[in-house]
Image (tube, rainbow over the protein chains, first blue to last red):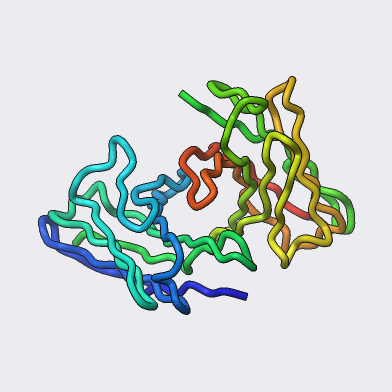
Length: 107
Length: 118
């Protein structure tokens, strides 16, 4: 099976930059998407196809993917960005795979 | 605006079959170029993709669940369905349906909780 590993938690001060990593074998060869999930809500797409933002997602969300690691960056983090963030990739054998999730806390 | 809504029993007995339906509004399944997926999330755990279906009925399933899963589509009624057989406590989860753009999911339903009882 194909696994995606994320750090369990990331803490950031308001207005600072948060970076969340997602690691997987040759992840850079696959498209990666990112979702945030607030308590009691469905996941919300924030990045697709490595670095594209859906309509309505603030510019402070950006991402990259290369080698074995994809990274989601939240610039100027706000309290409303507190959520669990999941990366997701498409593997030709295992199909869709989600990461282990990272809880972002804005202190 | 595309919206999805899951429905089905919230409680299923162990060894029986879980059946859920996802009703789609704001888009026509028969003319859509998207796939339609089922995804689940056990309490406090990460998301797990179950499988997807295209308007022509073609499907792909997660290899770990493939032997127990069937996804079907009813285009005239604009809905698609999930059947998961021989359920156990490990199948207790929040089940989501989502629009699937091949490499990502851009619209999700609110989810429906399914518990498996012994």
